[in-house]
Image 1 (cartoon, rainbow, N blue to C red):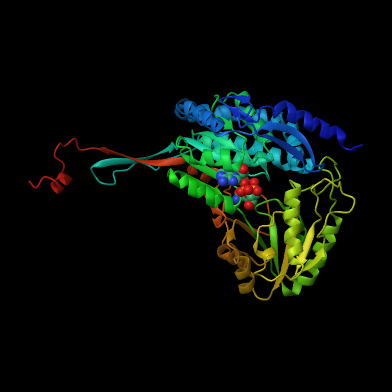
Image 2 (image 1 turned 60 degrees about the vertical axis):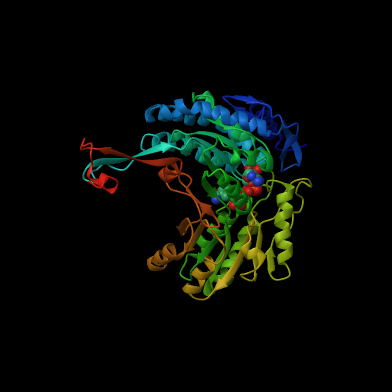
Length: 510
Ligand code: NAD
């Protein structure tokens, strides 16, 4: 008998009631037409909890048609009208918070504590933020730059946006993709990951129920190769916004460029965590454990490589090992659980593969296997601490996307900062020190889209999130992300009313 059966049963009921259809097009749920069945699997038990038919390219066409049909009215609405609808959207999401948290935990295996306290309130806050931001989009001030003309800049929606999202934070990723786009007057077709479609569908339904016109937010749930590439290559789509791995991002960029689309790429990460010798050791150890294990390490900004200055190194390793041992791995619906399973057994095997291959060149201090006594079909893996890995090894360089932290020592500040920058990724990083000058240097010299000082992970709606280098380009959240979903138009008025203008001398010799 499952001791947490009540919440799980409620979550399955939510999935059946609100995930029906798996495609959400022109304001209503509908089945896919690919003829290929797919199942949402509860990663804690290995059981299929919701079945649906994947989207075909024809379903993607229908969704793009719906988004195109909705575009003139939505782009033509006043900012106040868009804002008002989005405020109602935020309130509708807040009313459905419990259902959203249950479904998110069911499909991802994340502890209900995490989806209730982080994913859902973060999404509601993000929606409220963009409802406000919809009224603040500005162009440049007008001026007579040429002397004879008045110039000004308009920011206009790009058109229909095709978005592709990953499985690690399905609800938040749907929000990050959809909200800035629609706040700026675009309409959207979102393709969530096949593993985790439920909360994206619930998000789109909430938008329609809150009064956003049908076709403004559409969701197609299909495979990446088929539905995803069809959406990216679709001539009716003006912009591709993608969050996922760097490898798939490269492919998406190739396909999008064939039709010269605007691109927004949020890709992988391998965040460094640099601990200088004057840091508060207790704070750094707790920060590393929480930063490495959030969402079972399936977080693009998770702390993955801790570089610790030699005087603190041994104590840091001991403190992290001790804290890892105190983390309770278990069922997502058990209130005592700190760490749930990974999203799938395939992902758990992938993580185990990284650790097993590293054994020849590194030390697995703690973890490195399934937790004893965990559900046999569940995708569980222990918090794992690795030391002694070479800087150029696979486990130090590659994106593992699991509860694995590599800890390495460094001697002087130059070396610590050099090692922090020594992977292709540049999404996020943190530095731990009580010295304001060291902190300042770290913020300047670490090449990443976000640098935290004495913390690691917090995000807020007002501030941008996005990568440098192989972590991609473009920003999510904040006013910067709204700019991504607009195109800048220069408007130039002649002020002279003269038929034969001075510059016409370039053509008319007289
Ligand atoms: P993934 O790249 O495998 O898949 C992402 C999405 O792309 C899925 O919806 C998938 O169906 C789709 N897809 C796959 N092949 C495609 C193709 N050929 N054409 C179009 N779409 C295709 O990533 P994932 O495993 O779902 O998620 C984990 C990855 O996401 C990690 O690398 C992580 O770092 C990254 N991520 C980045 C951020 C960020 O903000 N930078 C946030 C979350 C996750």
